[in-house]
Image (cartoon, rainbow over all chains, first blue to last red; front, side, top):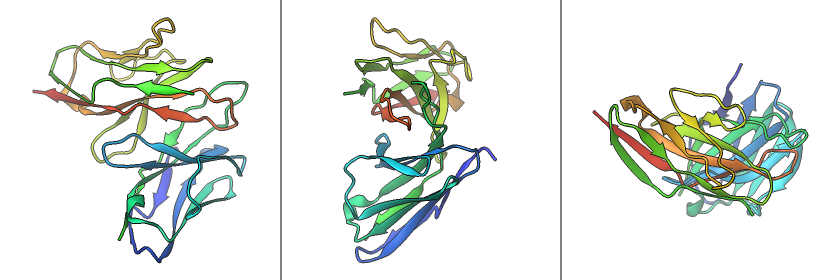
Length: 116
Length: 111
C-alpha cells in the first residue's frame, strides 16, 4: 500500500459541532503531518508527529487538536471552528529525517471542510 | 527563516514549446528542494527532488546554490502538463521534514 488515505472526503459542520478527520498510511512512515490549504494557495503546515509524538505545532488554535494513536493513524479533532477555518485539510507522511536528510512527503487527497 | 518564491502565478505556453517555472529560495543552511504538482482534482504529488537528479515526465530541475534557484524546465510542453506546480524547501533540522511551499505557478499548456 503506497497511499495516504483520508476520511471523510467532504465535511460540513456547524460552529458548535465536534468532528474528527482521519488519516491512515501503511508505508511504515514514522512522521505524519497535517496541512491546511486554502483555495489557490499553497499548503500551510499545522502539525508534525514523529514516532507518534508531537514535534511541531505551528501555533495552531486549540480548536484543532491532533492525535496520533499509532504509527499508521493520525487524527485531527475539530471543535468550535470558525467559518474562516473552511479549507482543504491535507495529511502527509514520510520517513523521519535522519542525519540531516529530508525525506519526501506523500500526501493524501485531503478532506474538504466547510464550517457554517 | 526559510522562504520560497515563485514569481509567476500564471504561465501559459503552447504545446511543444519549452517551459520554465521559476523558483528562488532563501535559507541559510543546506536545503533540500522539491517540486510538487497538483493536477486538477488530484492529490499533491512529488514531481522532483534535487537530491535524486532525476528526469520525471521530461521535467528537470537543477539546484543553483549561487543564484539560490531551483527552476523547473521541460523542453517540449504537453497539454497533460497543465497543473499547479509548487516549489518547496525542507531545511529545518527536526525529526520531521518541514516543508515550506512557494505560492505556486498555474501552468496552462494550450493546444
